[in-house]
Length: 347
Image 1: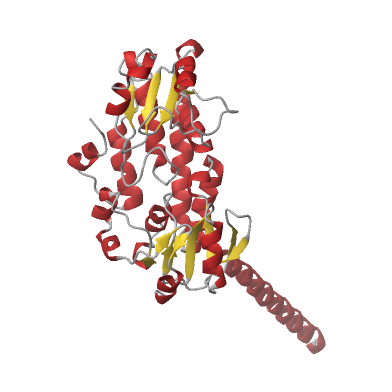
Image 2: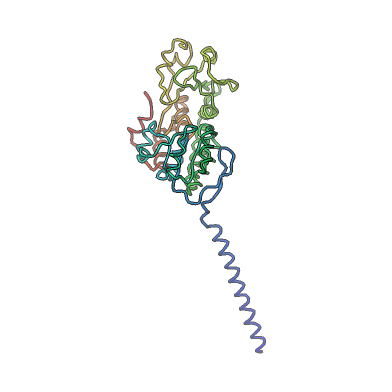
C-alpha cells in the first residue's frame, strides 16, 4: 500500500515537473515573439548593398536631397541630423523643423566636404544613388553610408525605402503607416480615375522653365500615369526636346516643375498653336514640405493635385485641402494652417 501511494506521489510530481518545463518553454516562445528587435539590422539600399545599421544611431548626416530629410524627419529623426544640404528651398519644412536652419551644410552629392562631414561624427551618412564619386570619398574616410533612391524611385521601391529608413530609426510602425497611406490613397484615386473614358484622357507635357527642357524621367511618367494622364514624350526620346517635337505632340496640358513659373511658356511665340497654350492649360506644380512632383513621403498629395487639375469633374469627391492637412497632422505632427496650405500653390 505504501509503495502504491509512493508511486502515485512520484507520478504526480513528474507530471507537475513536466508542466512547469513545458510552461517555461511556452513562456520563452512568447518572449521571442514579442521581443523588441535588435537595432543592428540590415537593409538593401539603392545600390543593392546589404547595409547593417549601427545599433545606436544618434547622429545622421545627409549629402543628398530627394526627400531624404523629409523621410528622416517623419520617422522621428529630425533632431539627429547633424549635417545636410540647405533646406531654404522649402520654407514650410523650416517652419515645421526650425532646427534645420542651424544644421551644418557639408555639401551635397559629388560636391562634399568630407573633413567637415567627419567633424560632425555621424553614425551613418545618407547619400544619393547618383553621386558615386562623392559617396566613395565618404566611404574611404571610414564613414558608414546608406544609399537613397532620391529621384530614381518607383512607387514600390520608394515604399520599401520608407520601411528601411523606419527600421533604421527604430520606428517601423510609422513607416508601415506611411506605406498604408500610400496604398490607400492611390487605390482610392485609381477608383475615381477608372470612370474616365479613354477618349477624355489628357496628354500631359511635363517641363521646366522653357518648353525644350522636358522632364522625361521615370518618376515623371509614374506621376502623370498615376494621375490618369498620358505622358506626351515617347519613351524612346531622351535629352533636350525640339520645339517641332512639342508642336507635333500637341499636349492638352503643360505642367511645370515647382518654382519655374508659367509666364515664359505662355508668352513663347513659338508654341502658341499648342492646345495647352491656346487653352491656357499650363500649371505650376505645388511645393509643400517638398516638391509635389518628385518622390518623397508627401508625393501622394502631388498625385491628387494633378488628378484634380486634369479631371476636376471626375475628382470632386477628393478634398485636397483635407487630405493635405490630414497628412501633415499624422506624419509631420503639424497642424497646417489655411494660409500655409494656400502658400503651396502658385497663382
